[in-house]
Length: 354
Image (cartoon, rainbow, N blue to C red; front, side, top):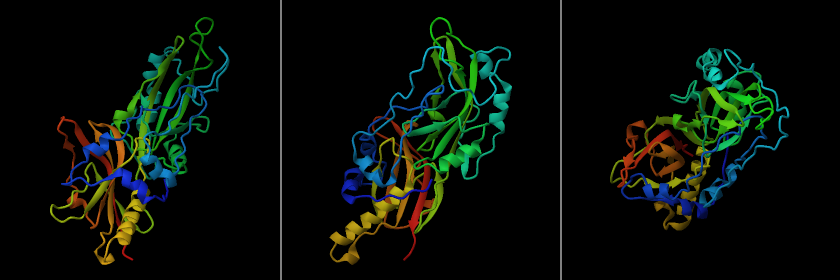
């Protein structure tokens, strides 16, 4: 994913906090509205699409409400044919959900799939019998796929603004729209689907285990999830991967410039942090006398902050000095209520010298 963002500092002022001492800002996290998890619709439904506009990222971050896809399942005539599957249906030993979930061919394909270039398999998210649900859901494809092809899905994700992860899986769907009488449990069609998300997925997101349509049981199998490494940014050195830790500046040095948290629907986009960092410097230069005393932002850490392993929010922290992995000592904290806040997908960038 390659994006750029232009951010108003006045908007940033609504989202940035400067807790002292430098700890996880629990209040800033709690102020982010919790959005429901969103999953691709089952069957051959009309595709839901959420468009990410990086230049409007700060406006979205300041908003109390964010858009999310509604029910995109199109109304079809009862017993009418749906779109055909793109893989052979599982009918051995029977055309039922249990046979589909136990099918060795599906399992072997998912377990043998190679990581696409630039992506890594989400830990634990391989050959699952559930697909991903997350507020950052963007869209899905099925008809474009002719096989279980993570590389094709990765290329589609790369071409999509805001896409950072995808979930590829087999889904058992009805071949016609079920009703309660004449075709309540029709023959199955197998679809390979690839769903795209703006955030870094984790195994916690594997919550969509299908649904019933009439007497027909829709289920998923062979479900793998992949996340991309963020791209380099022009004018910045990085990204450097810190895994599940964030930067904690040495005490007493005064280099910490604040934290910004985003809505749960905001994709993981370090270019937003980069633009905010530059505009913080520009603001300080305009409002500090003499200008030589202005605090200049030259470094940021972009990561996802989780509460009790769930509800991740994209987060940026800003600094006036450059740090590296030795200072990545913040591995999470507990608040007074006993909630555990942890960090994931942490990458750092430093401003190139002029």
